[in-house]
Length: 165
Length: 140
Image 1 (cartoon, chains in turn yellow, cyan):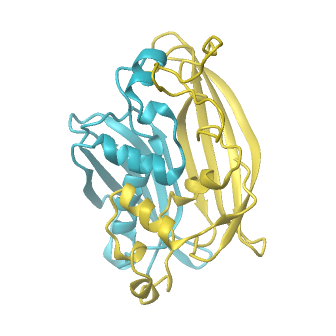
Image 2: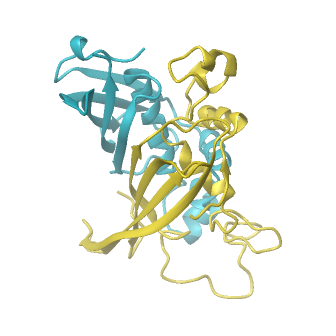
């Protein structure tokens, strides 16, 4: 996901912390955060994943005026044509691995941008005989001064049939 | 807050229950904040009838995020140098997850004291759902 502007906002961090069940005051109270070692509100370790919110074309978000592949009255909202075949995982496969390297803190007030590069890809036979196709995507998050803040490597896997391990 | 190199040993462990009886609503909360609205995580009808799974399941990144809470509670805020995981099993609603960190090495690099940490998150049956590793900066 390539994102030109990912503003790091306190409310977004607070809601993210709630969603992961993290009660750390650092994420809820700017005054408290100022007295901590980081000296300001910083993001939880996996927060940069929420940059998807700022990707205009992110394919796992319903778009205004377009059909959505999730259910509506029927099991899928896609009407008038056959359900796209061969995509048993739905929405482009499953997430197999995620790795982060932290170069600097992600701080409230920063505006990050991303550069996305493809990484390795490989295939493996699954436990149930279906083929598993892995591919790596490397996302570099830089701040408003061009400083590299986080390097994220995601590995996606597509399966020939639903993976219910 | 942060760990001290002089106070920890290889083999030390730290564990936390990171969620109890995971609710569908918490999964929806994560979808809303992360922006990943894949119906596999909230839309039971699509997930069972179209995608062919037994039920909706949590985003891997929700499990990684909850495991990360254990890590920052252990090593301190802003101390991680790296954090990576493999999603080894899907996590379904109702799961109770426990995340465990084990110190595998304590070393010095470029003047910094670092700990390497192995991570394992398991569900209430002992099934591992996340396997990972991290490194963190220690106080001397």
